[in-house]
Structures are given as C-alpha cells and as structure tokens.
Image (cartoon, rainbow, N blue to C red; front, side, top):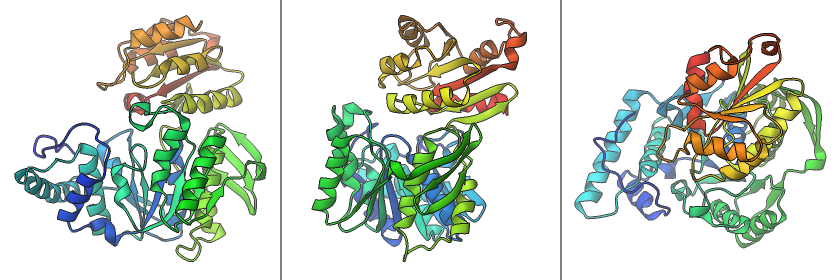
Length: 430
C-alpha cells in the first residue's frame, strides 16, 4: 500500500482537525454514515479494541477496525471482521479509496490549502472503506492523544473508551499526566457514555471533570471485582463482577484489566448492540492481538511484546517475572529515541541475564550502541547487534556464541520495545 509517490502529503505530525475535516468534506463525509466506539489512551488500546471487536463480530455484527501501528503489513491498518472471519483491505480496494482521496487532495492543493499528513490520508481512506463495506460499527483507535487526533472528527460515537494514561509523546501532548489526560479526554462527547481503566488519581479527576462538562457518565473498571482463577503464559480465566468464567487467550497479567475494560464497554452497548453471554465468551477466548506478550516460539521459548514506553515496560516485566520465574531470561530490545529509554533500561535491571540491543528500522530509532550503554550503566550486561537475525542467533545460541548445553532447556528469549522490530522476528521464526 505504497502511495507516497503519487499522493502529496503534509508534514509528518501535525495535530489538529481542520485539514481532516476539509478532506472528508470533499469525500462526502463518509464517517457521518457510520457508528463508532472510540478508544484513546497510552497503553492497551489495541488489546481492548480487539476484545470489543471480536465479541461484536461473534455476535454477528460487521465490525470495522482501524489499527495503528501494525506489525506485519500496512493492510492490517484497515480491516473488518464478522464471526470468525477477519479481512484486511485488499490492494485493489486500497487503490480505489486512495485514488478518491488523491482527487480530493489535488483540489486542496490547487486551492493553496494545507495538505493532509500521512495519518490523515489513511484515516480518510479507512472511513471510505468502512462505508463501502457497510460496517455496523467501527472500533476506532486514536493515533496519538485524542482532542486533536484526526480520528476525533467522528460524531456518531456510541461509547468512548480511555485505556490507562501514562507519560508518552510528551513533545506533543504535554509534560505532566494531567496535561496528557486532558488530551485523551478530548474524545469524550456530549451524553456519550465513557468507560475507563485508570490507577492515577490525577487522571481519574481530569476524566471525571470532562464527563461532567459533557453531561455524561463515567464507568471505571473496579479492580476489587477482578478475581483471576487461573493465569499462565497461555492466557487467563477470570471473573469480573457479574461476568463469570471469562477465558482469554492473550497472555500477560495486564490483559485481564484490558478485558475488563472491554467488558465495561460492552455493558454500555446494551440496547444498541446485543451480545449474548455465549457470544461474548466465544469472542474473548478467540481474541488475538499479535505482538503483545505473544509466544511466537515454544521450543525454544521466544516471546514478543511491544513494550514501547515505561508504563508498558513495567507491565511487560511484571508478566516476565510472573510466568518465567525458572527460566534464564535473555532480552532483545530496540526502542525509539523519543521514548524514555533511560527509565525502560532501569526497569530491565535485575530481570535479564543479558540483553542484545538493535536499532529499530525508523528515523526515530535509538542506536543499539546508545541503548546498550544505558543498560550497562544500570548493571545489565548488554551487547549491540546489527539486526534481529544476529540478535536472535546470539540469544538462542545458534551462532555458537552462547553455551548450547543444558541452558537451552530453560532459556526464554524476550523481544521487546518498538513494534517495528518484531516483524523480522516473526518472519525468521514462523
């Protein structure tokens, strides 16, 4: 889905809604013909959206999904699902919608108007596709922030969801939790129910104030009502309030909270989208979300996780310690330079016997050498590598650089940081 050569775009990141609104106006406002569940937050957006989407799909609804970032290919960004079927936008469909977007951009260009960014173009293309597919509902994730995120042009929202808010994208969203929470709260609409999962009091208060201003209700995930019956590296079985015996196949201690947030969202859909208990259980058990504490190899054990900021890193480390107590833990880590990689390195201390670092394939990628130096300053043995292939070879001992004896039976390798580093690992191991 490479359109960059033929479609003029604006600057890389520009927060604001005017350009998106103008582009969509020229396209006939396809978003006005759709209903949305809108999800903002720092961590857990994708997992929460996956639980909600799959449950709705198993209830028979045609559900659109707009996903960012992706792991394997660009077509993952725009998809629909119904029942067990998941369909990514085809190359032909994408060419069709992008040609319509291109025509609208040329009108803007001729008028001397500001041109849309790549994310704004993809958002408009997604809305066109969802309209063409006649989706019953679209589960829509913000790209960054909320208030000025280009997805926030939507009006027909049936539920607003805000996942845990943490320090991230401070350059654009603000340097305090309260400022960042205010940006996320920007998706809250007048009289549209809001569900949240937050532990920070300052965030709760900010969201509650916004809900009062918008004349709507805020439902929180109640941690005291979560009872985990079983949990391991294959998933969890838990109860939450009146929801009993919910099984999820997504591993990671944090996924139960994401699932509970999805349950609260589904609870708000009654009267609009009906989901039976059986359909809900089927949907949750069959929910997949790649690159989130996912075991991509069993022998040897290799786990991939997009722990891309300190809050996600904390949850990731919690799961590593919970599920792999007896394993020798080797890490492969790559992060973006605009993340708080020093804090992430601090969290890795005392968990991994050794970490191989790589530079993510992006202009924002932090060099493997700088990351290795930061880890070493925290007492973590670290070694920079030129590629995922080299790092995997060393971590698994297949290049002869590690002892390949008894250690192989207990070793677990964890690939974490930016989602952009995971694609090659999947290709090498699958």
